Image (cartoon, rainbow, N blue to C red; front, side):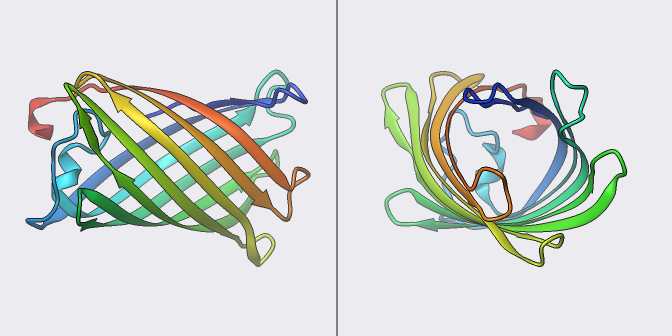
Amino acid sequence: MFVPISHNIETDYREGNLVLQADYAWGKTGLLYSGRLLDESRAETMKAMLVRGGYLGGKSLADDGEAYQEKAMLMEWHWRVPLKGRVLLSHRLRTDLRWLGDDSEFSTRWRYRMMVEKEVDIGRSSLVPYGSVEAYYDTRYDTVNRVRLIGGTSVAWSPRFALEGNITYQHDSRSSVTNLYALNVILHLYFEKGLAR
């Protein structure tokens, strides 16, 4: 579960989302490493494949959802490919079944993301720089209307906490903001049960 909140400092527009999801990972490979202190998928790093399903609910804040409302079911498939030097290449294919606005107009969106990351151990801390590119195909427009590039780093100093920061560039040909630049800061809190180990 996670709750992202975004704020546009130029327009003061804010929106929030609630995301609930469940994962299942499989596929052993001797090349995948499991040394991370933090990763949300610490147990999953030992698996090559993962499927995820979930629900997303979101709306614009301060106007009771008048500018933006969304309910969506999401499904993802991940394929992780370990490379030399503890570098991990990940492919993700995601589909969103979306109901947008007050009239709950239905549409689907397909998203493909490729990400490269590398873990670096610094004493008892873990540093993971990463970069990704993601393309969005939206059935409302029948085209690839959005491309997102992200570069950042996550730092973990205990099994329970991590801090992540990244810079995002997004080009969206169908949005009122064609080119978006964002700075993101994310605090990760991990709660783990024994059977997840």
